[in-house]
Amino acid sequence: MRFETKAIRIGEEPDIENGSGDVVSPIHLSTTFARKRVDMLPGGYEYSRTANPTRDALERKLAALEDARFGLAFSSGMATETTALLALLRSGDHVIAFDDLYGGTKRLFRTFGRNFGVDFTYVDARDPDEVASAVKDNTRMIWLETPTNPLMKMCDIEEISEIAHDKGIIVAVDNTFATPYFQNPLKLGADIVVHSTTKYINGHSDSVGGAIMLSDEEMHERLRFHQNSSGAILSPFDSYMTLRGIKTLAVRMREHERNAMRIAEYLESHPKVRRVYYPGLESHPQHGLAKKQMSGYGGMISFEIYDTVKDATKFAESLRLFSLAESLGGVESLIEIPALMTHSSVPEEERRHIGISDTLIRMSVGIENVEDLIEDIEGAMEAL
Image (cartoon, rainbow, N blue to C red; front, side, top):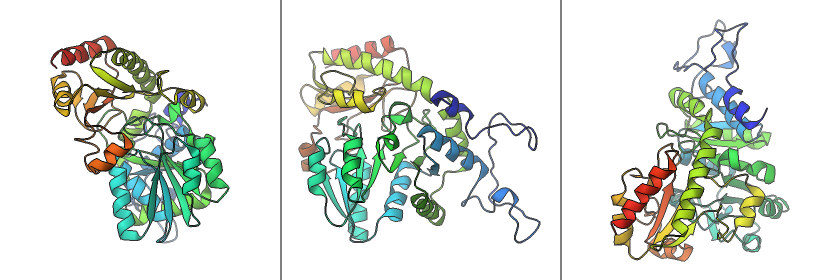
């Protein structure tokens, strides 16, 4: 099956012979499941923290999206990352991470390193040689985002995976920005893919969740054990909401990208914009890599505005259709200032070293009419 068909059909096949023939997976709210005998589990279910029919349906669909053998659904994107670290690392291990990551991920890494004795080294993973140079004898994982949040930096997943696998290192890729529709890290050599399903996969800003997709059975068993033992599971209702959202993922992503390309081109030509970060633009320094490992460029744009943080704030607060809010990936357009919002937990010196200026604005382009969105941007520019 092709992507659009899998997104609709996998995990929700109607059971006409033995069931009610539901076309949409029901919400199984029961926390526990009765049995006739002590040694017999009806349908393999005993307690919803361990397994739940609605979550199982979602996990099958998630795996299919990334062409993986296994999918795991979590209560949030951060619960996903925490579980991956707890399940796959031990005290004394070393992790190489992209220097430009979501602020919450860096905050988690700082806390995890301090509390569990894991060492983190941040490198500019745009250059695979920097990744290779950072490898130590105790390196166990390489953690990547591509495109990164918020500077839209790219890294070569295939080349970095080859470097890692020569030394038995796990490669984890946060694929939230690109989505499985535009990029498949497992096909490029990564070992696990993580998502904040809150974002594009759900797509409607009404469910918080996370996911891991992978094909290695032993690694899956370790992750599944920690998912169950920690209880960081996605609820049946949120599983249902995410199942619903996935069905339109392909349609939404095509529209997100179409609108984002138009807006990126508009911003690039605007005299009040210093610089635009969007992989679909030929001016992006890694546009060639984006064309190589992605089938599309997504709906996220970052740009720097002239001149001060006061100007950036006034611009963001003057918009009518772009909601000033954190998060991303919903059908509605959102805008935020990373230095003041999503990445405020990253120390100022570190932000400047990475390239996150005070006037950087991150835009999640929705699927409204693009002409309305551009008119909204023009009005906010005129307010400066």
